[in-house]
Amino acid sequence: MADPAVLAVAEHRRGELRDVSFELLTAGRELADAIGGELHVAVISGDVEAHADALNREGVDAIHTVPVGEEFDHTVYQGAVEELVDAHDPATVLFPNSVNGLDYAPAVAESLGVPLVTDAIDVAYDDELTVTREQYGSKVETTLAVEGDRYALTVRGGEWPAADGTGDAVVESFTVDVDPADSGARVQGYEEVGGGDVDIADADVLVSVGRGIEEEDNLELIFDLAEAMDATVSSSRPIVDNGWLPKNRQVGQSGKVVTPDVYLAIGISGAVQHVAGMKGAETIIAINTDPNAPIFDIADYGIVGDLFDVVPELIDDFE
Amino acid sequence: MKVLVTVKEVAEVGDDFAIEGTDIAEGDLEYDLNEWDDYAIEAGVQLAEAGVADEVVALTIGPERSEETIRMALAKGADRAVRVWDDAIEDAFLDVETKVGLLEAIVDEEEPDLVLSGVQAADDAFGATGVALADRIGFEHAAVVNDLDLDADAGVANVRRELEGGVEELTEVDMPAVLTVQTGLNEPRYASLRGIRQAQRKEIATRDLADIGLSPADVDGALTVTEMYEPESESDAEIIEGDAGEAAGRLTEVLREKGVDA
Ligand SMILES: Cc1cc2nc3c(=O)[nH]c(=O)nc-3n(C[C@H](O)[C@H](O)[C@H](O)COP(=O)(O)OP(=O)(O)OC[C@H]3O[C@@H](n4cnc5c(N)ncnc54)[C@H](O)[C@@H]3O)c2cc1C
Image 1 (cartoon, each protein chain N blue to C red):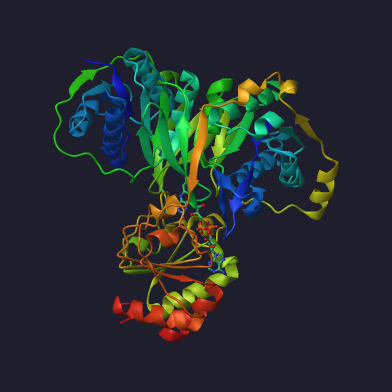
Image 2: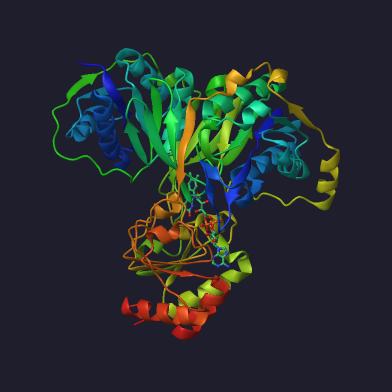
């Protein structure tokens, strides 16, 4: 087995590999080709054999299974990845830019003393690694040149297609010293949140409201519109953080993923964590005062205008 | 118990902006307290009010301009603040490792028991500083915390970590720890007039590189911004023109075509 150009660390939760794990394989293969070398994958904790089977897709050269613990524990993941890096000397370690990825990748980078770039949406290598990412609420993209010969990168979900096909990777068990019993952050359990009266995931038409609404009292306007359109009200996160709507109305990464026929985004900027929950809608319509708001990049129809002018007119039209 | 809260003044881009070289034109940026840090400050102040924390210190890396923002943290109840800055920092792109080096120096001076930082800064959105800092200073950590119950006697923080898809992880974290705070953890207060007045008298200590035993070479990070540009739009959205009445009329047609309220 040759030293890998890329070591990609898969993510799973409660028995299931997460989608981003398969996307990491595509990003990893791309980068390994550019650097010139193998793509290795690490599967840590849980049913590593079954996960290794599923991850054995086209382009993967080797899979290291680390059969220790069940669920994600950052102490275990950090220790295992550091031992793997020690043993196999990859040029790049790729992590998902997920909540759990961000719970250990920065610690791994820090402890290995390698530069870290998070939330990559594109990577290239030509004698030097360059990484593209977004800044200022997705209003601009920047390209970063990374010095050094080893890097840690976290990769945004949904940016690379999932790898497919069947691979012929070597699968090897890797024994580590790290012991879950020594963890200083012990997972006690999980809880599903956001149940309640309405399931926004069932709605055909969603009228979704964001921080542009400014005040709780103004929500009445949105409910009036939803009633006139026979639609359901959903929202972006700040509306829920403020306690103006319950958690079950929140669309996005940490809320619900919705795929309605029509998603009308009112005063929502279109942050990546919001878009993660609604980009699958059939028709996306945005009303926003800011012509550069990223929501317009994924919209089918848009009105650049003040919601306080447009929404009352819409209500009139529908009534 | 001493709580250190990391606070960043973030840059926000207005509706109209121009890119100059590899950054936004200075005049098109507005500055504000990072949204996530507002929740971290509130968490620290609530610990003080509950008698769990004896002192809440706000720590920022930022130019003189950022004192206005850090005063907001003081007005909301932080006891004092430390601001790290140096001309050598001005020109550098501060990567995670570099920031951690600066923060570590102040952690060494202050010896906190708990460090609260935001999940991410709204401008760069690296989302990595808190966890990297924890590794550097030998603290435990938890990222994306949306519920915190500190058991100081037992030396643990019982937290909820907000994972994707409405799932929360319940985790017991040994202290001392760095927690990265998610929005929604609490309800950040508005600074009262009294708080604002008191903040004027609170100390903001400044530290340059020499003060904390670092040299300009220590802030010369591994990352360089080589390009900045507006992303190409992936969709060909039809922008509906006209005044509010006309635009709404056209949108109503579109919506009815799509079967809304049919
Ligand atoms: C780990 C993590 C998880 C997250 N999970 C989620 C999630 O599940 N869901 C989610 O939504 N966010 C989530 N976020 C937060 C996300 O990053 C954004 O902060 C949030 O989506 C912003 O919400 P918004 O668009 O309503 O507010 P803003 O970004 O403040 O946008 C408000 C918009 O309203 C427009 N506006 C203002 N006034 C008017 C007016 N009068 N008329 C018309 N338009 C107007 C503005 O131009 C602006 O575009 C998460 C963040 C993190 C770090």
